[in-house]
Image 1 (tube, rainbow, N blue to C red):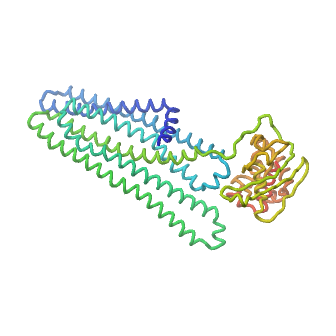
Image 2: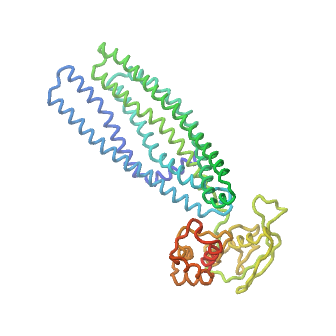
Image 3: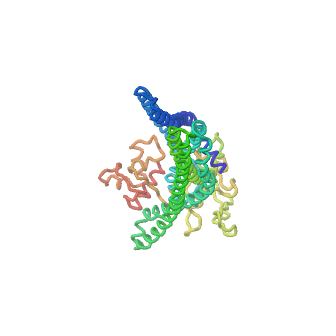
Length: 493
């Protein structure tokens, strides 16, 4: 939890002035609220004793009106600054999370599903926003309001009556520890169930053509229903805990009010306190309801936020397997490629059965090499190693222009090698934008030239909108062959 708190404090420091102004506004509201019952008591005593005339009543009314105006401005202030800071932190954390995902290696994505990642960007970031916003508000408000109200009760009414009224509320403080641990565990399970559900839905939607082609609709529906039932159960476990704790909280507060009426009423009858003090004290006890509820809410939101921060931190702590350690002096590649006794095994594969073993070949600039072999012999692996999507056991096993791959900056390596993977991925954009992807300064003529070189220009102009044709998800609008040739045109450009 220490590392999650460190991450949270990093963002709080970034927007410290917003938190400072928001907390100042919140303190102003609490301070004024703590004074309102005293005016009620003053009005009650004045009317009971007959010492308050019309001008005195108007004086108290105007003071209450002024307090109400200040409370309104203060509430707007703390909502604007504190909730605003939480939204900004959510934005920054989402940007940092996405930027970090772009740095991670292929092996990491092979072990983490898309649905789980989407859950981090939705539910988890929402919980973090609650942690940085509502949790700060409820925790500060509960503490300050509790202290101010207790001081006013002791100072202006009766220490003995205050002790009697507060005694049942002490149960809440001891219950919060158990509640926080239970909520943290259940919320973490809920988030993991949501991740599994998101992944199930994402895979079903992405593979809908395969599902329909193999008539697997019922099986997929059953699998989705199972994941949905698991998510529902995990959500209900959180709701059950809240449904148990919150009524108990109200019961304890109600017990405190009952003791106030019994003992406070007796003290008022025997003249130990005035009627106005009794009225003010009841108002103070009612004001204690929110701090007690806020304690429970802050513990709940804190537990949920820390559980989500833990899941997000696990991603931010992930280190890429492929690091950019290239020599900045290398600015371009000429094309002399050497594989020198190359050996490679995928993680988890026994060393006795490597994917590639003792591969030696040299390709000079201007030469063409075709790599042919049976399925699974390592052709794709060889190309992935060349662009450092995977790392060979010894960097010197692959050299370009006489330099080991690790000495070449990744930006230069990826810029100067045109690579078309087997699984051609097209974005939901126009055909021209897909071909121009990665070449920001490419004009239409360059795009068309690349399409002609890839033998896909005639297919493109046959579409009603030509190069401006919008593609569906993953290029579903075009055929498999057209998709591959569009991807080749992108690589050529």
